[in-house]
Image (cartoon, rainbow over the protein chains, first blue to last red):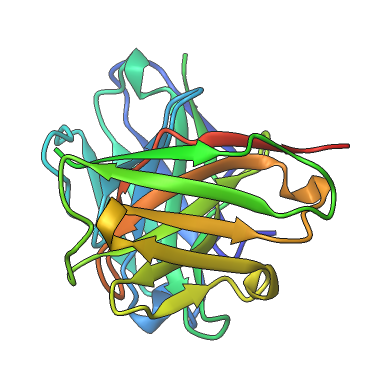
Amino acid sequence: QSVLTQPPSVSGAPGQRVTISCTGSSSNIGANYDVHWYQQPPGTAPKLLIYGNNNRPSGVPDRFSGSKSDTSASLAITGLQAEDEADYYCQSYDTSLSVVVFGGGTKLTVL
Amino acid sequence: QLQLQESGSGLVKPLQTLSLTCAVSGGSINSADYSWGWIRQPPGKGLEWIGYIYLSGSTFYNPSLKSRVTISVDRSKNQFSLKMNSMTAADTAVYYCVRRGSRDDPFDIWGQGTTVTVSS
């Protein structure tokens, strides 16, 4: 069981908007540690998608956005495209466990 | 652009030691601004942080693996390494080497990953 909780799967039609939640606690997200998001297409290594809660690395389309509030964070994807089909992971730090923590991952299916 | 490439033993017998190396190309490992580490992913499962090292020599390990893991840096070869002893089937995974800044920074560069299977 992951310290950060994500829904196992989400889906949406091309062009639609989807969100992926990442729920933590007062010892990680709620302790003011940043949340980062990674995208992992099938058979490939993860790639940094959002850093510092809501910042996009160079080259990441503005269809991807992140937010954080209290003990949770969210990733939003607008204008869904077939190429967005992948696993998505949130990541933060847990001060009680002294460990970098990941969410369990969410599989996005584009219908 | 900086790239990371893992290499090492793909098949390890139970109770033996895993040795992996990550070669850094397109840039230098000699920057105090970054740490260098490892993350693994068992088949069909999520990501697990193993640990990272700063050039100062400071290391930080996942408490659940700390007793079995050593991460080291070879500045002269521009590479860093992972050793994990007492391997079991539960350690079968894809192992990724990664770069990270300090404290709260993300893992911004990943290697392509190398598959490690623990089997007799």
